[in-house]
Image (cartoon, rainbow, N blue to C red; front, top):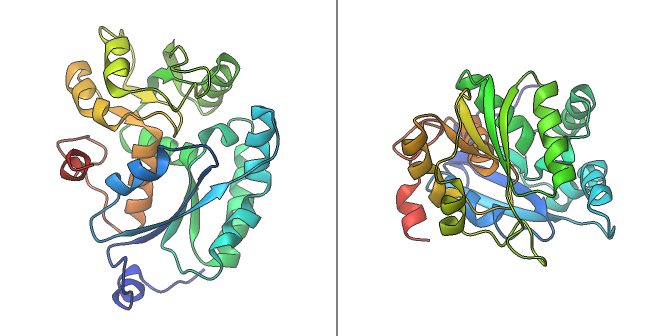
Length: 258
């Protein structure tokens, strides 16, 4: 499918000349949007919509988020994005890779831009950094941590260890984590045999932990939001490594000011 080049499309924009991105994030997630605004390039614009479900069961909500993805994308009407990010890794764990590819391809054909799932962005990052083995850090409930681990094994990764974080709050088990508590929990993390550490999920705040942990471990430390921002920025040619991360940098000043 032929599309106008990013440079031609962006030149006519009032805002977003360095990239116009959409973001779909779960209804209760307070982390993905602020982290993506920090991570995405200066002079880019980010427009957000919520993935919603009335299901009480988390398993069903995650399924509904992907089943209703075409309708969620339609919330953006005719906005001509460079790319849209689907910031919910948990929805991908139960999907067949071909099933996901076909569903996203249908949206791209209809809308003229790609939709990149957070899980696909992480997989792209693994390939870019030649990562074959990971140490997994998860704030999920145990059943979802196991689904995550199994997903990466099916994708050909070796999971050398899994650190199951205790819930930070009964009311918000994923979203209530803080960087100091996270770094304390990760002190002395044994990542031997891994090529990278992955913080899974888009809801756990982790940006301030990435750089110090990467320096301490001597290997890439990735989060799902970091990988998704990198994959979106890559569409517009704005993804480069930096002091913050060997995958994708240039966001330290924005993080310090947040």
